[in-house]
Length: 253
Image (cartoon, rainbow, N blue to C red; front, side, top):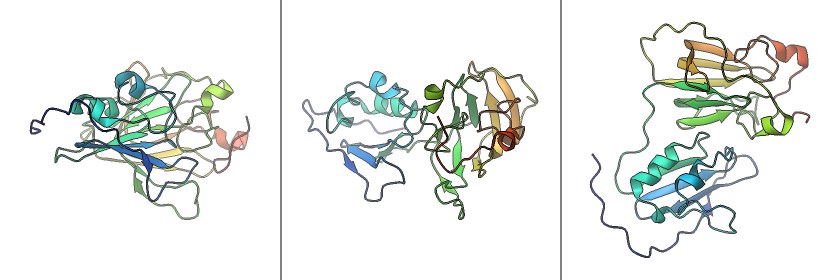
């Protein structure tokens, strides 16, 4: 149990949001902002603008402002942590500065199929390939939350960048249920390997659910479509070969 924290100061100083020393590949550096108890990190390369932050903690996450926009001290600690954990893309994460427990992996690995949108994953995610350097795959732990492109047009593959909206992608969030037999183990590392010009290869315990939470499949491995053309969504049916899908550069609009 966390140790009770002292009362927050009535007028806390506003933190300065600054880029990480080593920013990830992409147009946005990772931003950080700190209170006395929490470091909040924001990776704009993964953000899908779900707006869980600006509606859940509007005093901390300021919309449509110039300059520093993350003010961790303005929201009670546990409330702020809950909002960050609701960020589906993993763009928001945190580090405790007060000795409290860090974010924990979920007890069940879940992949939600969003209506006309991406895959939303909650698990201990290990990404097995950096698509910017396909010759040298590197397995990297990327946290417990991610949204992965399934329309085929994201410019930040394997992550979603909302291109499904730009192109008018249509795909059900309620696929037909298949094998839903209970798994002996429901958590643990979930390895995701984006195949060059091909699907997402998944290894590890996984429960695939529909947008309404219905169980679609329980499995320990899966091959998921990410070209947007499979006739058996969310599973791959080799349509990426038929349409000439390319994963290592921007897709055509």
